[in-house]
Length: 179
Image (cartoon, rainbow, N blue to C red; front, side):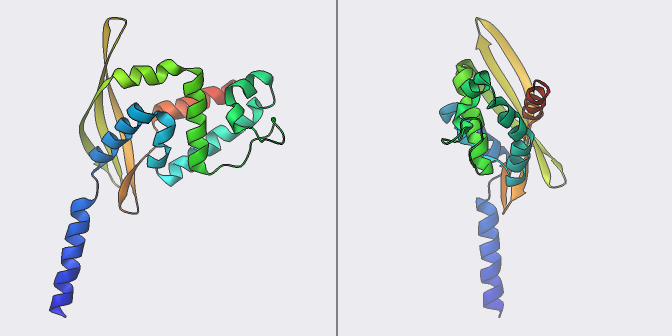
């Protein structure tokens, strides 16, 4: 019996040693975006956050596909059978497709981030949510800009997963108001 308890304790200790910290999750998120774009980071979001993202933006995309300009921007969402209808997506694919559309329309968004220096400073616990503080430095047209930011993470199956930021929520709200 004692042998099994020791084995269980060793397994628990080894699992906790290999679990990513919130800082590591945010570093991975930043590196993924810098390397492969915003859409590639969808897999790093907490499933509940992916569902919220889809819920916020689905009506916007559906309305946009009813107009020529909207289909130009969000055409990747269109059903092959009817270009005015959103085709089926998983929540992760929905977020990935949204960011592909935005990056195609605004390539400078990714370009600026690729040249930015982003430092992860630490995190603050708020119950099950971990708020990771970052500092971004970017030089654009000779001007240096520094911005502090918070990226939050919440555990899912023992791994910290990214939550929607205030900026993403504001973007969704701004797009909703333009409908």
